[in-house]
Length: 310
Image (tube, rainbow, N blue to C red; front, side):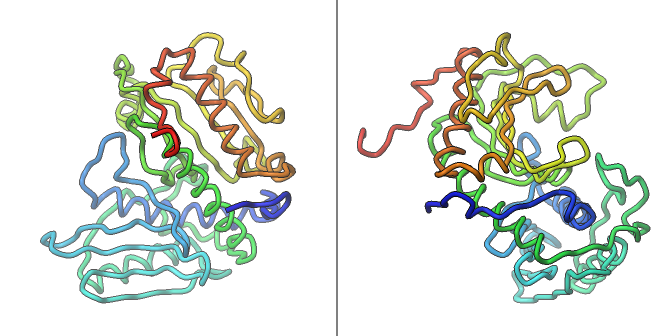
């Protein structure tokens, strides 16, 4: 699908920051339920959420004796939390201004218990400045439907572009999925080369996520450090000279993040391009080529040719 210049909506962080944090905390609660109940998958792929036509979803989660599943969806189109089960049951409650994180938490767990779904999560936000339990977070209760809908529209489009880019690679690739700790939509390519173990001070999540050499790509709506929506790409471990490699488009640039180079493209710069989809694909390809070349990946062997070349 072709998106023309300026068809993509604006998403200024300052205009919806409280709503974004509220939604982020909602997503962490839903994500922690999936984390607790899903069988383990490599690199923590079992914990993520997914972009769906109606919002952000867990996909099917097993419960009880394993014969049944349920799914949780943050419906960002009709603005409600949805619970459905393989038994044909369904429940909802509205997402609206005034619904605090604490109230969301209590309502969701009440629905789960009513359907016989018992789950206990680590009841605190992860990697966020809010440190108290979800059930006590009343200060975040903002929900602006207009900006939530813009966010979902952007995420739907980015998800589609990431899927196209993902299909160009023969090697191991993760699903296009949302990591709810940072709320970044990501897709990662693996060379197949194992990395040395991380030191004992690193988290278990980091040790599993970076057990093998990767080039990762993502999008997030901005945060306290980057004050606008942006795309990123990094190579782990970063080869020497990575930040000297060319990027496309001209607006893309290398940034130092924790002592390692990250390719950055601001969403607002992308919106100004005549063909944002083509430009985003070029950005993803250029950042991949930069890392893969210097890290010695088999670029030709891992490239999926167009159907016309088969």
